[in-house]
Every structure is written in structure tokens, then in C-alpha cells.
Length: 50
Image (cartoon, rainbow, N blue to C red):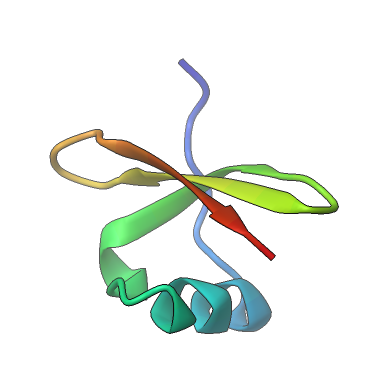
């Protein structure tokens, strides 16, 4: 599994708009139309559409 990266300011805003806490999520993939994130502790994955 790839290592997640800390979110940028714009990415954190998108995570917050999805109803999640940006401090708990790491960015795995950042594509043009979707962003794949992973939880820091539980390793649950989610996909957010932009």
C-alpha cells in the first residue's frame, strides 16, 4: 500500500466539505475528478468526487 500524504489547504477544504475531519485523513491518489483518501488510524478508504 502506498503511503498517504498530508493534504494541502485546498484538499483539506474538499475533505471538510465532504463532512470529514481533514486532520484524520491522508491523500493516497489525487486525480482530476476524484480523490482517494485513507484514515490515519483505521486505514478505511474513501473516494471523494471533486
